[in-house]
Image (cartoon, rainbow, N blue to C red):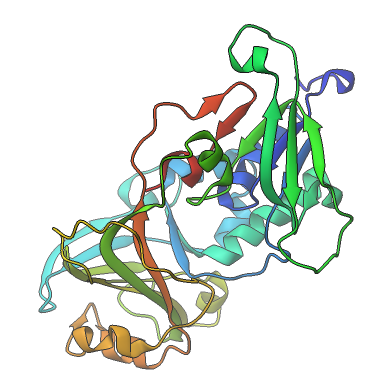
Length: 335
């Protein structure tokens, strides 16, 4: 049953990524309507590369009414094939509905997935509830509430602009009932709560990622996974639109260990994942790799732009929730 309008709590979400947008849609489905989303980026576009959405997550998205949009945009992954570094087949296993799940597993372009969620948020909550170019700066809430001694109070959230581009009115601060900080692995909220934690912890491995449209391989909905812990190559198609044209938009990932596993330096290298990097940084290690009907050299050579992602995570913390604030997604449990 929807909540009465005059009893609606004001919910503030920091971060319009997959976690923040899905949270907004889930809260709206539960009857909450006074929801505001603040995003540091001044523009949300189809940036990024592919991701996999497992059946456990797809079930939630299905219950939010998003299954038709996902089926139109993504690829319903049918199988996962493992190979060694010589291209010899090791194991093949079905995925999603082919494995007996109630819902599919999807492979999808991350940017297209984010825009799919954003469009649903704007349709259901209103375009005016999404505030771009507003980065979380700080928050303040009642000390009594923070100590758990009072059920009343509010949380004041402050924002700063990251760009001079002003497409929307500036909102320096907003007073609400709840703050959900979904502001990523470099979360400002988490840093304020755990000021001594420091930067994310680098695994010593880097992913180089890209997309290339080509002829379909194997089933046209197959993932391939080759190599070992310190050098691997993964590829899978991610575009329903390409499939309808008889093509495959193949998302690929080349992974290498670049720092010794015993190196005490765990600080990740500086990187901007929105900027392309030279292929010479990694391509030599995969020149002779072939598996599942794919040539890794050809995939890399024919890809226009390649992006770099250091594999990093964070150690678990004792708490995600403090009074009227909770962390969510990578801000809470980066993986």
